[in-house]
Length: 337
Ligand SMILES: NC(=O)c1ccc[n+]([C@@H]2O[C@H](COP(=O)([O-])OP(=O)(O)OC[C@H]3O[C@@H](n4cnc5c(N)ncnc54)[C@H](OP(=O)(O)O)[C@@H]3O)[C@@H](O)[C@H]2O)c1
Image (cartoon, rainbow, N blue to C red; front, side, top):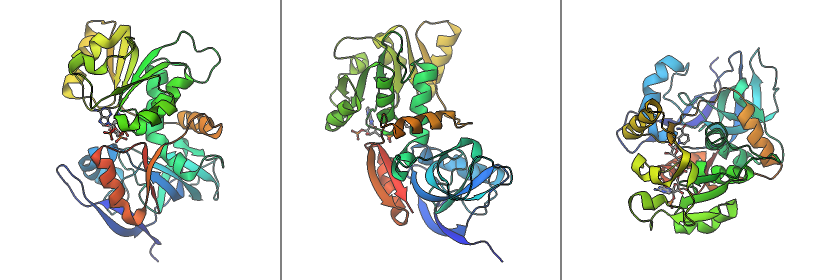
């Protein structure tokens, strides 16, 4: 007898530019030895879902057991319904949050399969929608700020205060970055559109720059109070090194989430010339549950929240997709089966 079917959104084929999705009925996935099957309660989308659309299609024959085109969506909350033979941490009925592989994804569906090692329990204090916003965007903000910018979060002794610039602070990554940087006792300058000033200020930003009204060149990122930045978490479209450089403190660094060929080259040159000011390119590759557990703990204690742009039913997933692709979401876009 065949496996039970589920409703899912899949990529509709190779595309150039704007992407297409289609609704399908496909078999519910099975858990491998170290995996759990999750009945999805909520999922969120990220720019990676449309940026590596063609790459996911190309890699599917190598990476996926499924017979259908890839299902987008890396960030999922839901209930465990099946566990693999080697799974120890979870049992059917557990409410969980997980981050699916960036290459195979699978969250925009009624069921998905996740690795045990990147899955954590979802406490009752964290709603399914709030939790679904967290994985990719929250982990990116957390790792950038702690491992690259050197912030110590939520500790009584955070050391000397750092000046941090977060660009696109109204987006999925930026909203968590502002909140986390404040938990690290940083002075936070944030760029966003003026329509989101109140929101980003409420998240904790000390100073704001309206990216639509900003001056040209280096002046576009200049702190209104004249501070130089110890670290820039750059979540907005590509900016040249010459724009960052005059705004950095002596040992200031830039963590670029969307590196272009030019910024990769600048990053290499900084390394080769032992420059005090540095540019790091970043790629999230979650391999354990440590960061997600920490973030969920902060959320449980009310120290971190998810700003939700909008919620959409899976049956109307294209609307969510268009909103995401527009690049103008405020916070996270959530899809619910
Ligand atoms: N390398 C990695 O591992 C990694 C991980 C996560 C994300 N990323 C990348 O990081 C970027 C941010 O991701 P995200 O999920 O935060 O995106 P997002 O949620 O789609 O960002 C949307 C927000 O960005 C704002 N924005 C757009 N252009 C801006 C500009 N020039 N200056 C300031 N704000 C601007 C928009 O404000 P308005 O609506 O007012 O325009 C909107 O609120 C994406 O390109 C994503 O691919 C990379």
